[in-house]
Length: 185
Image (cartoon, rainbow, N blue to C red; front, side):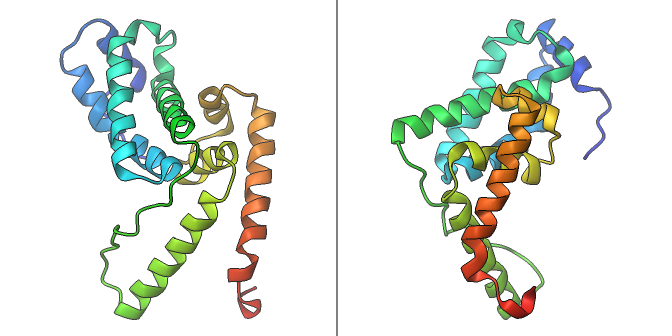
């Protein structure tokens, strides 16, 4: 995790006090993580960008609603989560992840192909999970958030997060069985 010269709490206080630099700093600090979360949850880059932009607009216009400045990150992810689920509710289905994303590396073409295939399989399996399972898995595994933060974002208890995460991992492993070679175990 990168180290920043000022804490989230200090940055949030600066935002609430009208510092003109604070919104840009918050955007730069969280745009990538929010986009990644929304992209994996929605499966669509354009929708993810829209949700991230809407998240920052709502955060700026509702900055007085941030009651605990130290929870800036979970507050932003909560807004993004709510916006993403609103998009999902409007579309009534998860869209498959874009297959136009490329992975750039120094790997051989065969290694790149294998990596791309594994990524596509994982994305397909993730898209088969229920949205509430998928979101906790993304927050924990891709965003490296702790249970408390995930609970705050999803508006549930820590035990509920742990339960959903257990079920998500179990369901993901069940769905992955056809793709796992016996000699790989």
